[in-house]
Amino acid sequence: MEVTDKAAKTLRRIATKEGYLDDFALRVGVKGGGCSGLLYVLAIEEDRPNESDRVIDDNDIKVFIDKKSYVFLAGTQLDFSDGLNGKGFVFENPNANRSCGCGNSFGV
Image (cartoon, rainbow, N blue to C red; front, side, top):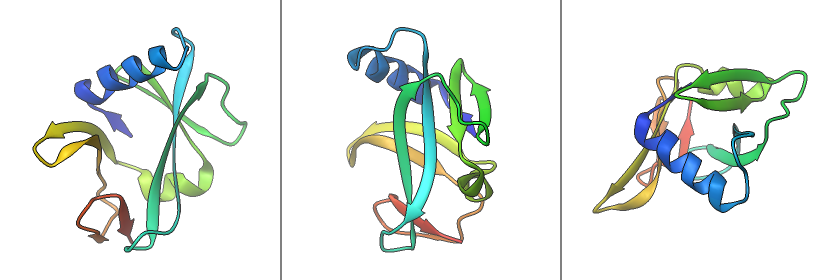
């Protein structure tokens, strides 16, 4: 999982707003749903990974990914877009063979 500069900056700003100082991590996962079958799930939480989590540190952001989700997320880039189509995190996932128009769900 790669975290772009823009995504990292946005995550730090959100974490600060939520009361985290420097001791936070981003949990990224997938769950069933959406028009393409799988939805991305993001949460900011304390820096305490579960024993079975993959822990990735990129761009000074710790990312926790559970074992099941890692299969779908390996090699994915997390970016942040604030263009004309709205603001939000954007996933570039090489494992996805289809995605919905809004980019919130994908299929493999």
